[in-house]
Amino acid sequence: MLNQDNSSQGQFWILLSKKLSNEASFEELQELQSILLSNPDLHHKAEMLTEMWEQESINISAGSEAAYMRHVMKHKKDFFVEENPTETESNDPGFKKEHGYFRTLLSKKKLTIFSFLTLLVLTTGAIYLFTQKKAGKLPAEQAISSIVTKNGNRTKIVLPDGSQVWLNAGSNLDYNNSVFNKDLREVTLNGEAYFDVTKNADKPFIIHTKKMDVKVIGTAFNIRSYGDEKTAEASLIRGSIEVSLKDRKDQKFILKPNEKISIATDETQQTIEKQEKIVAVKNNAKPIPQIVVNDLKPNPTNNIIPEIAWTQNKLYFEDESLENIAPMLERWFGNKVEITNVSLKNLRYYGNFENETIEEVLSYLKLSKPFNFKIEHDSVVIY
Image 1 (tube, rainbow, N blue to C red):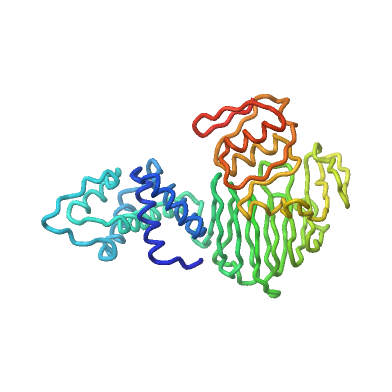
Image 2: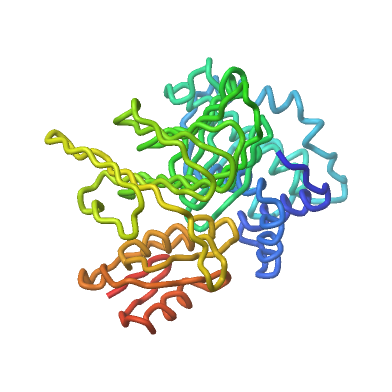
């Protein structure tokens, strides 16, 4: 994980606490966003704490609660500061969560904002892990790390071997800490990620996705494999990768730099324009993935490579249908997008956006081929 400046990280916790308690000003929210952009690895911490904060309730037995509170009290000197006798108990509504033990402790001590958040992470995180193990979701013999980005967010992480991963919106990356970087380096991806893998010939790096497995030694490439999409892609920037299909592991494809492999299992995807190599096998039992290998071609006007434009914070598409653009907008902005007029789904558009809002993007697109849209809260309806 990257090291952040202490003052910047401290400010991050203060601003995040204000945001969670709905006390942050517009300027403070902007400052928090700026810190997150400068320190991408803080995104995961912010998302985890937000989910913990918003969780309605955690069912836990009295004995388990007592055990965790004993652990907290063992380290109370790290979290609490003595209250000045002349000061009165804080009326800050941010401290009035429905946790009886917080109120008991706060009656004699007071927490700074940073200390309170640290305590919250310790107790809520411990309770979360306990309940997950109890439910059988986290076996004790495994140490699964899961990095999740919600729609509207993107983040960068550094794996234990030094490999860097940029995770696109609506994606998750899992790996087992107990075995990663021993004999193999294996991760599981659902969504889209750009990898810059640290070279180690003795420990191959393998990415498992729904439709394909990608094996590398040290290279830079992009993988797109969302569970709700009909096509999966791997785009190689430098180095070499070996791609094998889940349904046909005996057949492997070696990509060279600036090549992309597309795998489509849906029969409606069988026609792909400007294809260079096609491998198709007929099977009456179920559709066999069609494999298309193309060269990566930067746009001659702006020199943008469409497949990795998102890593440059660009929402970019070329000759894309509105039906396919809708989920891209959902992930990019975090809004639910619905097309109610079926005749609009096949309209095709070009777009290159960076700092625009979703309203600005849709307003621009409708200038090319008209449609109507309305935005209500977090939902967008195109009609």
